[in-house]
Image (cartoon, rainbow, N blue to C red):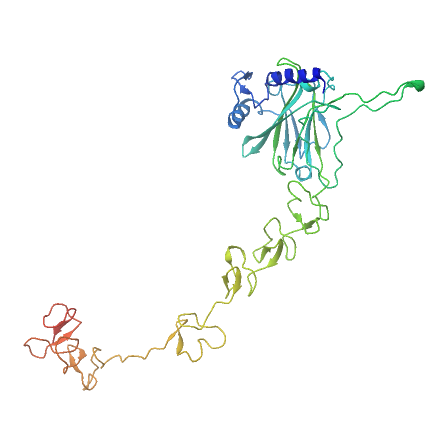
Length: 424
C-alpha cells in the first residue's frame, strides 16, 4: 500500500463514526427525542438496542416473504430511520437459513480509489419475538482496494458443499494495446462494502428486520443505494444432499448420516434428529434411533421400561424376585426353592407359624369349660401362668390380694415390674 493510502486510512479511521452516526453501535450514542443521532461514548448492546427499538425499526418500507429471492435495490435516498433503509423478511425460509445467506451490499456507484476506504456499510439485524423486535447483532464493512497488501474487513459467509466460491475482489483485466501497443497491467479497483447474515444469524421460520445505511465521507454525506439478496443453499435441503459443514447440517426433518448425506431421521434404524427420535419406543444411541424398553434394551427416555421391567444402569431388566423381601416371581417358583420362604401379599418372606387365637399364654380365654391350655389360668379374660414367680407377665402379683396376676392390659396397679400392672 502506498503512503498516500496509509494516510487516507488514518483520515477514514478518524471520521468513520461521524460518517455513519446513524448506525454506529461502537462510538455513537443513539437517537434523541427528535430522531437525530448524537455522538457520544461507546454503549452497551442493550443501550443501542433500546434506542433503535424506539426509533429505527418501527416501519419497514419493504416487506418480503421467506427472503429476497430476487435482488431488491433501494433508491439512492431513504429516510426510514434518519438516513437508514429498513426492510422486513417474514417467515425466513430454510433454503436460506440452512447453508445459505442474505447479502446486504452497497449498490451505488463504485467508489473511486481515493474514496474506497471511506465507503462504509453499517447494518443492524432485529428478530421478532412475540410482539417485540429484538436487536440481534450489527455488522459493518468498508470498501476494499484490490491488489494492495492490506486485507479488508468484509466478513464473507462460510463455504458450503456444492457452492461456488464468492468472486475475489475485482481486478481490472490485462488489455492488449491497440496496434501492438504496450499491454496495460492490473489496476486498483474498489470492492464495494457488503455484509452477510448466514446460518448462525438468521433462523428458519422467524421474522427479521434489517436496518442499513451506506454513506461516504462525512456526517452530512449523501446516502447510497443498498441492495438485498438471499442466496439459496446448495446443501442440506433434501434427502441425499450433502450435509452443510457450517451451522445446521440439514433442515429440520433431516439429519446428517454417517455417509455425510442428509437422511430421513427419527425412525427405527434411522439417524437421530439431533438427539431425539420419533416416539417413546425409540432412543438415540450412537447417533441412531434404536428400540428401547424391552428386556436387555436401552432404557427409554426418563428411565422408562416396558411393563414388568426395571431400568438398571441404562438397561431394561426383569427385576430380581423370589428372595427374602423381594417380589414373588411371576413365572416358575414364586420364591426360592428350599429357602423356607413363602409368597405372602406379593412378597417372599419366612412362613410364620400361626398362633392360637385363644387359650395360649396371654391370649384371650377360650369359651367353654377349658378356657386356657393346661398350665394356664383364665384371669380377667386372659390366659396367665399361676405357677411362676412374681412380677413378670402372667405371674402372681407381689402383694396380698385374692388371685392377683401381672398383666399388660391395665395401667395403674402395683406389685409388678415396670410396664406391667396387677389385675384380677
